[in-house]
Length: 229
Ligand SMILES: [Zn+2]
Image (cartoon, rainbow, N blue to C red; front, side, top):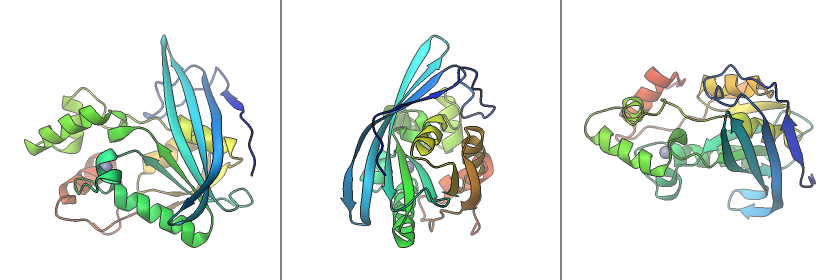
């Protein structure tokens, strides 16, 4: 699929009821800035760069994300994973979380099927940023769980917005998805942003001794669904 640089606008009256998106109330624009061939060890993708500009009252917030697209994703609802950047997990292989394993699982499921989309958002630590995430780790070492630590630092438990991934999918011509996620709030957030989730497929990885507590908190406090726990 070829997409030129375009600007996609959400009407100024756009309002989301979801907690993730409740601060994106005014105008939003999402622009595709690049598109290139992208061979990986999972197979051949196309990589798209997107930039979103969100106005929140007086504040203008910019977000960037990439989409890895494999195969035909428009003739039927594709497999889609929306992944938030996790430097410590994705790059360093941290065992404090399950991010890298989920990322690799998503890429291999897309490769197995021969088509799908991985959206990688630059939102470190559920949107709180890398330094704050490291401070949260320090609080967790002192006994707080991941939600308590974020709240102690003055952040919501989950600070992400899903407007950008939803607008990126629409820009790629995708209005229905099979979402790879354990998080029912992500399903709701995408649907409120105008992308229909016709199926939620679990993205579960085996826990290790370091992630047991983290996954337990995700389940109990953030409502994530796990079949195996
Ligand atoms: Zn992580």
